[in-house]
Amino acid sequence: MEIVIPRATENHRSTPLNFETQGEYEGIPFRYSVNPVRSNSFIKRRWTDFTAYFKTIKYLIKTKRDSDIVMAMGINLDTMIACKIFCMLFNCKFVWEKNELPFVFTEKNAAVKIYHIIFEKYVLKIFDGIISISDSLHSYFKDKAGDKTMLLIIPILTDTSVFVPTRNNSGEIVYAGRLNQFKDGIFDLLNAYQMFSKNNPGRKLVLMGDINLSSNKDEINKYIEANGLQDKIEITGYVSREAMIERMNNAAVLVLAKPSNLQAEHCVPTKIAEYLSTGKPVLTTYSGSIPQFLTNEKDSYLTEPDNPVKLAEALDNIFNDYHKAEIVGIKGRQLAQDQFEYTRQGDKVLLFFSDLLQTA
Image (cartoon, rainbow, N blue to C red; front, side):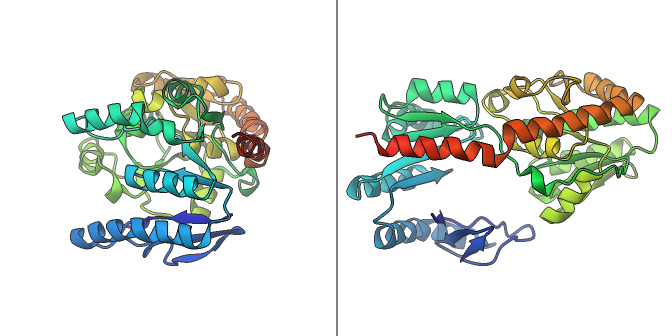
């Protein structure tokens, strides 16, 4: 197995995580078709994206003719078509892994709507298998994919072993993510914290993420300044994986104010699995498929989406009976180990691949 990455992934506006075009990460070999760090030049970025397409296909044809399965994640249409042609030529199966509803983040103009129709009617039928993250996304693909397309649901995954439970408690309310309203309800969290902090001085809100990459950067900064929260909220910027895990392990509560929208309806936030893995209390919302896995005041705390008042009340409840919250956190980690541990789900994927290879 090898991970082939057809385009640059490291943003030039933030601290790059990787400079190597090929190597190995945790025992898995990887290869980039181009320089991993995107150029700060618009023209160079377009040229790199264009050439990466051909370099990826050339590499596949030259070295991967003995492949049994090509699994794609987040690729564009031209790469999809090229991969399908490759699979037909060399008799291998084409699988797509998708954890978001297609086109949920794209602008809904006339051209996109037409493309969306074509994609649903024709493109989704080119896959031999599709792996999705939720029941609702599974239903979407079942209705749109080909009759012979095999489908599998694999929920959010985590490696609980990297999160070592500790009784250390910084007292902080911690969020980790993109600082985005549409996906993570960042303004619902800010509004809730503003109400909560009036009666709970000294409880810092930590936003772990690079605000320079947030589409809501200016609005977030204005909100914090307008409400005098500069000394109460810390925006960390980019932090290493190790530093992020340590901050989460030592938090008082981990929070995600997931809103109710089309994106939330068809996904399960992967950060929830990592939150739960810490063994600390987790507060999130009844959005999408989240309540399918989590139970309020048993393994997590759940509240209404799009409702900062209820979110603030939930924070009050957690800190007013923190002993109970600690028990909920421990049960949350048990849930992550039972339901979301990647080693448990790996067998399902292997069986899926085995069944797929036996189909005509």
